[in-house]
Amino acid sequence: MTSINTISPELAEHRLSERDPSHARRWWVLVVLGIAQLMVVLDSTVVNIALPSAQRDLGFGNTDRQWVVTAYALAFGSLLLLGGRLADLFGRKRMFMIGLTGFAAASAVGGAAVNFDMLVTARAVQGVFGALLAPAALSLLTTTFTDSRERGRAFGIYGAIGGGGAAIGLLLGGVLTEYASWRWCMYVNLAFAALALVGGALLLRDRAETVHPKLDIPGIALVSAGLFSVVYGFSHAETAGWLDSITLAFLAVGVVLIVAFVIVQTRVQNPVLPLRVVLDRNRGGSYLAILSLGIGLFGMFLFLTYYLQGTLGFSAVESGLAFLPMTAGLVITSQLAVNVLARRVGPRYIIAPGLAISAIGLIMLANLDMNSSYAANVLPATIIFGLGAGLTFSSATSNATARVKAEDAGVASAMVSTGQQIGGSIGTALLSTLAASAGTSYLTSHHGPRVVELATIHSYTTVFGWSAVVIGLSALVTAVILRGDVPVIDENAVEVPAL
Image (tube, rainbow, N blue to C red; front, top):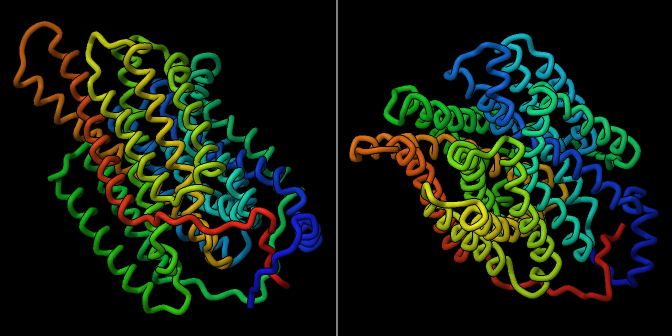
């Protein structure tokens, strides 16, 4: 059994370092994990900027273009829970290193692609290895930082990387595409992976496991197929519509498979997702917050980029720079949430207000028009959105993995990545469909000069408005689900698991 001994911080530090050599190097471990996290998050947006150039170079059509993004999302989103469980069962360092190596190799193949099929296959393989890498990295962070005071700082940094990395990806993608080649948007992953691989080999270690439970094969098959069906259904709706028979079939099958998965998890001995992980109020509410913010975040990035470039005439690099103030706000409140607020109020009073603040930023974007400017309208809205997102991301990530059993750290971490990825995939498809419908409706009901430009802007503002609704509703729900109490922390002691 595990007991808690309250001892002096100095003695606790010494004992932890003796038992776990990686503890003494924990801040360098955070650097390694942060590099890996940044690589994965960057990849969700850096490739989007490169797509038009890749399309011209490889000669594929507009209908094929979405598959460069969708292939990654399908593999990544559907296999994350498997990746998290493999990390729990066979070693987090092992899965981390395998994920990094495979991701780098797939990136090299994608950068060297000579045709569309080669590029899409590389993106799918990236998704497979990303599903091994992402949960392993977060679970390593969870098991490395056990002291509540340091854990807050670590998760604040990690949350800021997760929330702001997508914006940095837009800037990096613009710079690489404009001044080098779209291929460098893939090759750049080799540099990140090389640094993380060297650091991982030197700093990380797997704990010896004496018991290796069997994998829950039925559960893995059900959840992977179910998530694949849901993501594919939403992606297919983006081009074929919501009433298309293939769209409806995949969405229906996905729902049935996920329901079956939940039932199976209550009956098997070693479930891939122990329901205790998601039934905890703080973890369940945190996963919901991450999912809903993922929907709004990716939709905002996509359509605000369209607005900046199409309406305001920004270049790809200027568009990336335009998101940096939002990222700065996100970083500031990420640290505030876990280092200051988490010690004074419960997650209900951090995550729910964070979502509400982000919704306010989106409402401001929903009021953009042809006469709006970046400085007066876009900048304040994105800063407000970033402030709210920072509160939500860091606190939700920390709470989603806090107080989880050691054997469940990988799958709890995988649920964080699953929420972000599924939210982003659903958001991109759903909001793209809403934008198309809003634009068409505006064109049929309005006439006059510049009607096409007005319809385009109306489609963007419709997306921002619906994103605000989704995040606002999530703020209300999480305010009910999440706990308002704060765990009592002895500032003069460190919790040390007894041998």
